Length: 325
Image 1 (cartoon, rainbow, N blue to C red):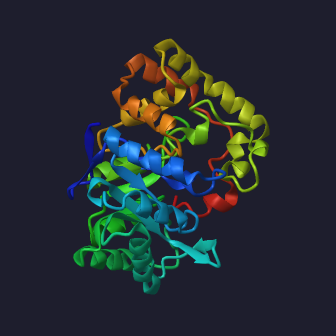
Image 2: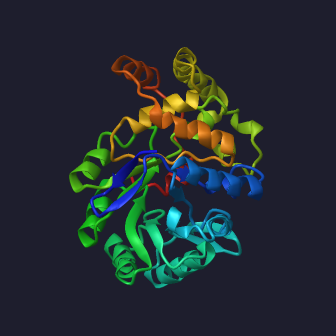
């Protein structure tokens, strides 16, 4: 797989990464053997950019990657995140208390079984702690060699600018897809002005664009999608109808719907590296093959027109409250 630069500080990764959250968290029962086989298969395919976080589990996803890449650390570019208050095994809210950041990163290093993190993100902006203070601690970790590059997740324009003024930010992680295009008016122009890469998560719309989504109520209460407004009631019906354009084009091209959705994201710029999540080798192989698909201008326009209006908010009000917009 070809590689792309994230930011202007030297971080180069595969043009598509792998979101690892679902291997341990949020999307049902885990299968460690298949997950590790998927991680190893990614390396074989040239996918070397892996995304995790301390809150995924909590902690168990980082531990999984530590086991999977033992003896192969140099082959993987690992991104992880801090920014949630984890107590008694549960996430109880956002926090970037500067007195705790170092301990959180040391915990991630231990679980990942490594002495450095390639890309460290603040997972969510903490409105109680100035971003300058947060990035100041992160920058100290870069100078100490424990972290190589810095990122933000779900940050807004003002905080991106303020953070970048303290230490260069290499990447912003945020949701972006045919299904969710809120970054285009304000965020992406600022990223390109400052030379910051974009790492879209959920580029397949949590399965909607891949044609595998079910109604929210069909998922167990422990599944992230159970509370997804876009998968509830009439919203589900409207969105399923809109996503038919993806399925129709995929059928015409002889490829999978998810490959069309990923191809669209990857064609939005060489500074964009999506991280579709999966727990299975078959899905990984399908996703990776999307890097070789090129959409015509007419195909792109038709997809964008069909999905111009998506029914329902992106998140529940509680989840949306942690997004810095």
